[in-house]
Amino acid sequence: MYSLLRPLIFRLEPEQAHHTTLAMLKLAARFGLTAPVPPRSRPTELMGLQLPNPVGLAAGLDKNGEYIDALAALGFGFLELGTVTPLPQPGNPKPRLFRLPQAQAIINRFGFNNEGLEAFVRNVRTSRAWQKRQTLPTGAPCQPGTPPVLGLNIGKNAATPLESATRDYLTGLAAVMPLADYVAVNISSPNTANLRKLQGGNELDELLGALDRERQRLATSVGRNPPLLLKIAPDLDDDQIAVIIEALVRHHIDGVIATNTTLSREAVKGLPHAEETGGLSGRPVFEASNRVIRALRAGLPARYPIIGVGGVMSAQDAVAKIEAGADLVQIYSGLVYEGPALVSAAARAIHRHDETIR
Image (cartoon, rainbow, N blue to C red; front, top):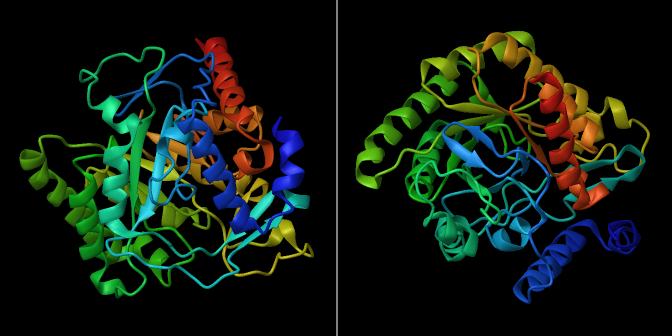
């Protein structure tokens, strides 16, 4: 079905297609025209969370938490929503989204466009998926119809100076911690000026230390302490990865998401839109992401949680992420190019892979 719709969707300007497709999906879900697609996959446990399957939606598709129930109907084991910033912001000027179909790639320079924490929290709270998750007993195994785990991804406002970035992340943590199954800290988007400087040195230590202290403080009043994960870039050398590994362990961060989009254009040289500013996702980031995942798995303690994302365009790609060292995988650009069937196909392939190594 998606193969028939994609040419029509691709005739639309990319950002218009993004919003139109999500709005149609939401409408279909509201009138019961979609139903959860249960992949034949063993439920997965990670970080104390029970996930229906190991395939998730990467952050960035649903920045405001407006489409949770519609996306849940596609069969994801978990959804990562956001990135949300404390205050609403429009993001970067349009156009800011570009397709590179010859490379199965996308360039975006959205810049954390979102409606802010107040709207985000309201949308999450009013979703059926979140409300149903609140009725589940703690640690209860997944059953047919169990809604996906909800990860909430936080960032800083563009107007906030880098030296004050920690304040924005603490504000975000306090707002989403009562709602989130896990919290993702995005310091790797290339579309907010200087944000990636937070991935190293004193800036990283200050941020992670403050987040760890604040969540321990909040845990008592909130009554819950969801896992905290850091999302990092693919454009890191071995020394930078080593610094991140040491900081993750020292500051008791529960997991890592590898990776965000890349600034490299090596794989798309000469293609239309290849020189547009922004982060490149899709097929070209696949190997760079896997390199970071392998380095993380080699350097982190055994069984440290890793979510692999970047260039998953097929079921085999999802398995390759697991083989590189990831525990879970996320999809974004693959959904645009291959459609919702990729979700269940990836979950089934990971299930078969797990069966062969048991």
